[in-house]
Length: 463
Image (cartoon, rainbow, N blue to C red):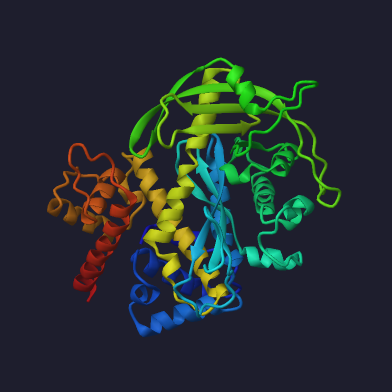
């Protein structure tokens, strides 16, 4: 097992040391067996039964599971001297294939709108990342369904035309963005470093921007709406002002494995507050002074890049605007985290009885997924780091034995970069000259094969 993974759960608030010990044993089994079911990962009927009882225990909640990890995440964030990025995003957990699971939402929102025949949960996460791209941990995670939000406000249908304009932000699903911002600010209030909140277009909510200003929080949010500005008699749109601004320079953005050349423009302006009905007004909305950075692809393609980034950080120079682009680029980290959670550890494959068990499992798998991602990014950012600081002795021994088999040349001291190459090659990575860095699929498949070898060595050594 990784040296530091168990420490994420030692201070869990489960009110019973036996539950904490069971959680650590369960995490060890799951982390060593990505892509396997709970039953297969546990390895025996007794261990599987204990796992199901653990997830159903009333003392076990997502908050209690996450507590120790949140404290460790705060500790890691406070140790960083540079900027901390708090990335928010939502993903759906679909369980339509398991109709017996209780208490799930019937309507799940997707790109095509609300699906009436899809059952599942929405998972919203605040993910802390260093400015170098190393994932530091999960600051907050919540689950919800649109059904339950509709029921709380007595709404007959999920998608009623014009109803959002008559409902205060506190009664909307979008209020989760504000809740997570406030929670992260409170958790990070004593940090000496800079904290920047990063989000995609779904977070382009005026109330979110207003709360960020009220809380003195810094943000980079991709805009979904071409908002009107508020500068006296001038009420031009953001796009009109950007079109009239000079081109600051070009930047290369990778999309669909292609390098695309994009122009960068920036402006500083005041946003006009949207109109709200008297019932929908919950906080005063004022004109906000924001910087806008536009990244637009030079050559028109079928799906051209066009980012319109709102921020309260400086944007006047090309260097400042480029820094905003680099901050937004780090948002891919949470997409990778979701991919590991869903594809690597199969959170959507769990056939549990009810929503409570799924939420508890999702919390455990989220921490394990973060840890695998952290290891992967650590190898890319600190390739010369001594692997002995990350892995225990028997894992180091197995890695060194495996190195000759997969033809990886290593020195006397095994580095974290070499360890990851060995793991990736066990997972099918070819490591040819033009292959670049291994992907996460090779890492988690190789991780499983590595632990199969560790189990065999332990059986031979200790009986």
